[in-house]
Amino acid sequence: DLAVAGTVLVLVSPVLAALALAIRLDSPGPVLFRQERVGKDGEPFKVLKFRTMVTNAEELLAELQANSEGAGPLFKMKRDPRVTRVGSFLRKTSLDELPQLLNVFKGEMSLVGPRPALRSEMAEWSDELYARLRVKPGITGMWQVSGRSTTTFEEYTRLDLYYVDNWSLVVDLAILVKTIPAVVASRGAY
Image (cartoon, rainbow, N blue to C red; front, side):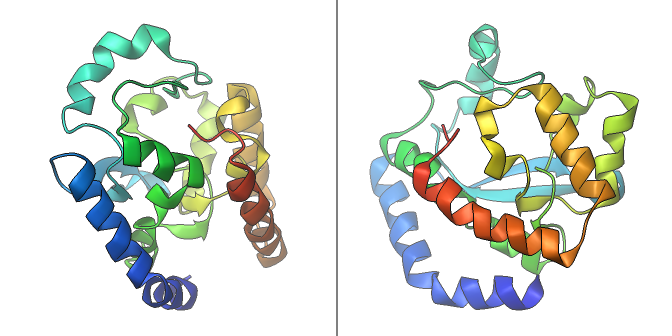
């Protein structure tokens, strides 16, 4: 994780700078979005992403909650009015996730693992889903390469638990390879 994250950060630094500039030119506010998520063993950490929404997006969420198209407790909207023009591109291409390489470098995340959860989502988890906290959350994972927002919450749960119970380097490498076509096809990305 450390070697790959460090190498990729160096290689994509010009892309990171260009994306940061595009975000600044598109809408006022910070370039990075920081949000508390739950990591391994339930430890909270601040996940980093490129900001894809207006700065008051969290306050607007309550008004939009009834329009969620996400599975279970996951809030998702195909045409979320809070998303900026550049943000829409970043989400479709998954480039908004690149700053999470810093989370990997800091040891808070892994390249592959379950999606880092919000504490509010955990209120709707079954007891068995807490097992996903035995591993570090990942930038990509089984759920992400299996359709993301187009999967059901039951599928999300099954994939996460399967990953935790069957982790191996071979599984991680297979997920990393599957991530490339999933990102290129933008399956379930919105």
